[in-house]
Length: 122
Figure (cartoon, helix red, strand yellow):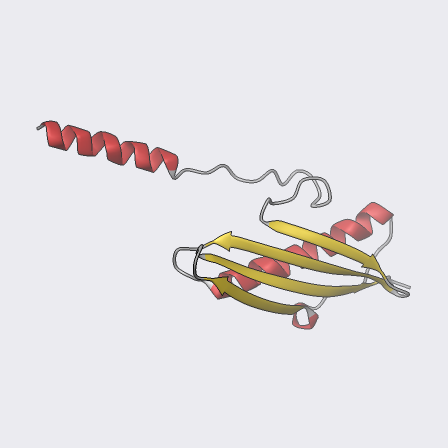
């Protein structure tokens, strides 16, 4: 009986510890970013480029899910940057975003880098 109680208490504690809070998405990515994401924006003659470096812990590697997240971050950051500058950009085709992934097996982190080019609307 005591073992069952201890097991139940331990299970409840582990379940509570596994809970996370969602990120604050009410601010643009320029103000509050995911702690796992790093952005670099550089001006070009026709607009600007966005580089995203993103990594997260994944016990079971899911490179596909990480690729989607990385592309989404690059696109969102480009549109936020254009809005902040008060200009419009041409739609970004996800097929043109260059993405690569990697995995560190020692700390179980999967990472990706994305590079997107944004052009100003004429």
